[in-house]
Image 1 (tube, rainbow, N blue to C red):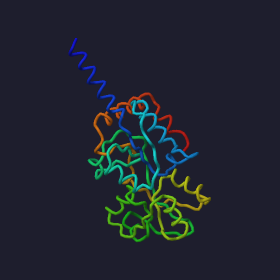
Image 2: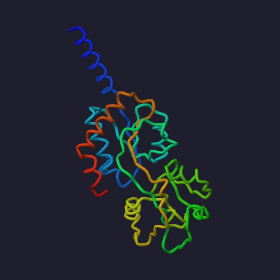
Image 3: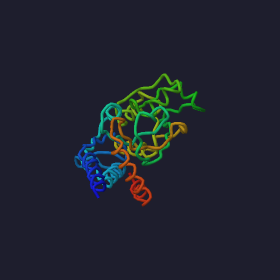
Image 4: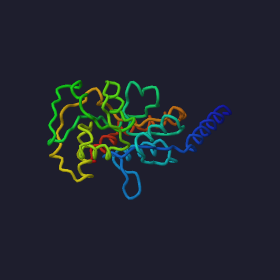
Length: 241
């Protein structure tokens, strides 16, 4: 009886400790993560909030920053949850991966009015490509030896450089392209997809900084897995961005 009471007390103490930690949730502006009425919203944000609430981790704050800032926080600061982050071999041991929210496929886009001859990845190296700092596309192209990368802090700045002729190509998903056309009032019929970056296409996750307690990580994973089995993740992410 005493052992049972001690075990229950310990479990309650651990739960209270986990619940007492404020989780700093960070992301960037995408079709699935954006600010609406002064609050970070979007389908991916809804998935993260559903997961944390199901896990009983209700003390969290969601903030939207330029990608490089969110990424740096998740690398260096305890109790940070970052989303949507691509899971790559280089990043595998840098984070605690808590759940795959969606899969994405990146394509290189150009303006139709500036035709370029691109037959493969090697031929694309001749052109200026706009990327976001520390984004998976930036890291992927840099690792492939691309030397004409033009770096921006945010996707909208990157896209505007394409429209103004400062870059020749930008790597985007189809949803990214549609959203950015809407934000800049540019007719998407003026964009053309020239090739798909198959190796850079991957899953986008929620992930914790390494200096986050395993109790928090495991509770989040368990909650996400249950929501996925119940079909909640798929239903939320199938909504139009």
